[in-house]
Image (cartoon, rainbow, N blue to C red):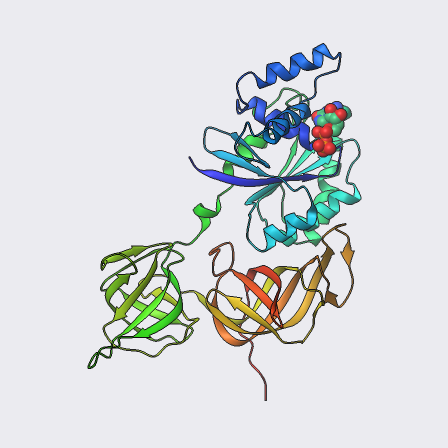
Length: 420
Ligand code: GDP
């Protein structure tokens, strides 16, 4: 079954746990008898039942090792399975997300209808924009506390979308809900006859997964070129790991950025016999009909498919781990795919403190800060936007000998040329 990773953010007490508990219960995704046993427990202790308790009960099971998957919560619709990525600490979450280690493909941002837009709702908006999550729905919770008023809902919608627009998030998906009462989560509710938009589950089902959006044309970052050692054999083996797509003997391949091209004469995969065709994740080597000279770090694509972008400038979201701050115009080493080069920070667009999510205004990016920046690379490099290709859209920055930061490419920019 298809899966989608989502993240649910919102200010404490705005109803996150209630929403998650309710989604689990209303989509029949809980272990059998769980809902009843938690309700019973509340009754025995003369406590009112809360949907949020379901999460605590599941967490207890995880601690005891009863459920296999820790720290992740699943629920399902008719269309697919959803994994809610938990964010226990902002720093860890930001680091994983921005380095591409774990990836939320869509987000629900919760706002309390009665409390309105809190300072924290703004921080969460900023967080989502830094993570490059484009599929966002704003869920206005606790509508029961404002008598399901359309006016209150619209006021909040106008106020918050104006703020989001300043961050470049163009979400006009606002859903009035009551997590506690289950209003507009799975089905439309009679409590909000004026609301004609999608329910929470409908909007989730309409979001696209990375797999659906990703380009699966052939790509192979070139790791090594070997020469045959026998006499009178001038063939070379071009080796690397296929990051996407498929390659066949006879296909014409193009190397980027060098633009050299030739046809595949044979495909050799290590440990197994000679192949005629290879797919994603296989470590391979191929020989060409004509011997060409190319450098490690080039990206191989098929001539009959789309080309990776080639540039020396890009916009990125990055997370900084280095002891020394990332500074403007200082040289750092970068690795993208199998390519290595030197980069310079050209512009800092936004920096936020990973811990407090407060906006920082320094001319550098400090340890545990996340930022939206523009980089200039010394050499031309084949690269792609993370949303289109996760492997070639990710990079690591090395300061002296340490990994100092990592990030994702949000936009490949026009090539930079030095003026003389
Ligand atoms: P979290 O901190 O964001 O996870 O918030 P919780 O899910 O723990 O909810 C905080 C409080 O808000 C709890 O007392 C919930 O019962 C209450 N709450 C959550 N959703 C609703 C709702 O739709 N309506 C009302 N009236 N209260 C709600």
